[in-house]
Image (cartoon, rainbow, N blue to C red; front, side, top):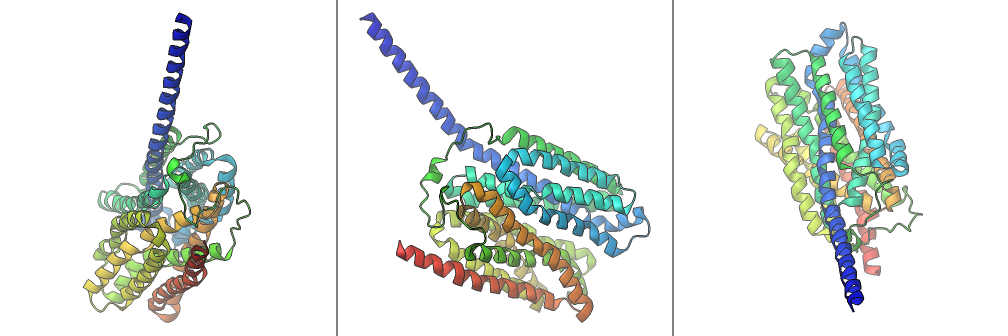
Length: 439
C-alpha cells in the first residue's frame, strides 16, 4: 500500500514540476518581446545619434581638415547612405542564415570602429573610410530588428511595438542635433570627442544586445500563442516557401516606401535651407521649426499603431489615408501663405507622415511572407526606401541649381506619394477586398 502511495506522490510532484516549468517558459516568452523592444529602440537611438551628430558641426570639421568644399563634406553622408543602402539585401540573407544576434553584435562592433576611425581622422579620405565602415555595419540593423519583432511580438501588439522601436530614430535625431550643437557649437568641445562618445554609446548598446537577445541557434523555437491565433488573410504560413518577394503586391509596397522615404529625406535634408531662402525664416529659427516633424512623429506613430492593432481589418484603409495626408502636407509646406500654416502642415506631417506609416508597412511586409523570408523581405523593402535617401537630396539640390527654386522638388515629393496611394489602392486594396469576399 505504501508503494502505491509513494508512486502517487511522485507522479503528483512530477506533474507539478512540469506545470511549473511550462508556466515559467510561457512567462519568460511573454516578457522576452519587451526586452527586444527596449534593445531595438536603443539601437535606433545610437544609429541616429551618429547620423545627425555631424550635421550641425560641418563648419568645424571643414576648418579642422583644411581646404574642404561643401560638396566634399556632403559626400560624408552620401558615402554612409550608399553603403547602408547597398547592405540591405546581403544583410537580409545573412540574418536569415545565421540569426539576428549573430549578425547584430559583430555589426555594431564594426559600427563603433567606424565611429572611432572617423573621430581620429586627420584627412578627408579617412573620414570617408570611417563613414563607409559605419554604413556597412548599420546596414544589417533594419532586417535584424524588424524580423525579431515580427517573430516574437504578439500579433495584436506588432504595429504598436514597431512604432515604439521606430521612435528611437526620432529620439536619436534630437539627441544628435541638440547635443552636437550645444557641446561643439556652444561649449567649444572638439568635434572628434563627439565621435568617441558615440562609439561608447554604440558599445553600450552592443552589450544590451548581447544580454537581452537570444541566439536562435541555441534557444528552442517557442511560438507565441497570440500569433498562432492570427486569422488575417495577409499572413502566410511557413509552408508558403514559394511566396515571391517580387510579386505585384510586394513591388507596390517597395514603391510606396520609396515615395514615403523620398518626401521624408527631402525634408530632413533641405527644409532648413528652403525656409531661409524661400520663406524668409531666420537661420537661428529653422532648427526648431524643422524639429517639429521629429517631435510630432513620436506620438503620431504610437497613436496610429495602437489604433491599427485594434482594427487590423482596416489596416489598408489607414495606409491609404496616411499616404494622402502626407502628400497634402508636403504640398502645403510649399504653398503655405503664412508661418502658422507652415507650422500646422509640418506638425500634421510629423503626426501622419513617415514615422506613422513606417510601422504599419513594416508589419504588413513581415505578415506577408513566411518567417524564414522575413529578414530578406524587410531588407528589400528598406533597400528601395533608402534608395530615396540617395536620390532625393541630390535631385532637390539639382532642381534648385537649375531653376533657382526648390518648390518643384517638394511638389515631386507630393506627387510620388499620390502615385503610391493610387497604385496601393488598385494593386493591394481592391485585390484584398476581392480575396476577402472570396473567402
